[in-house]
Image 1 (cartoon, rainbow, N blue to C red):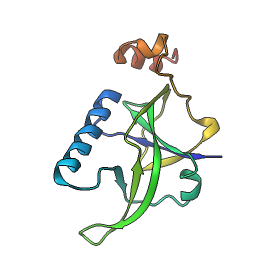
Image 2 (cartoon, one colour):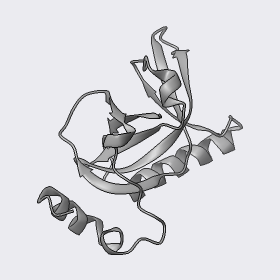
Image 3 (cartoon, rainbow, N blue to C red):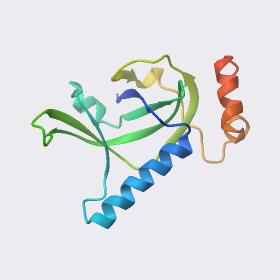
Length: 145
């Protein structure tokens, strides 16, 4: 069974904001002639790498609520120019929107079992998925979504 991570998307206001950031980074890499892949660099290396790469995703917390996820493509140990060891979480560039799930602030990342992860919202989903983000946020904070 796949294992996931949950992480805060600091400085992101919405899923659209995160999508825009990813598109910007991918275009910058294309123009620079670098390999076109998206990764998030973190200090700590997950010990359960094989479980994460067995179909796992990183679930992004935006404004206190899990709102979307990205599938893992790879997890690499790297050393920065400053000589400090880090980890690159290589992710598929596409975001998959999920049902919203409130999360309190935390540092770093946390493991998230598949059974505890919020479900995906289909591309043709009606109802809550079609609501404005501000309304969805308010309803989620009240525990109504």
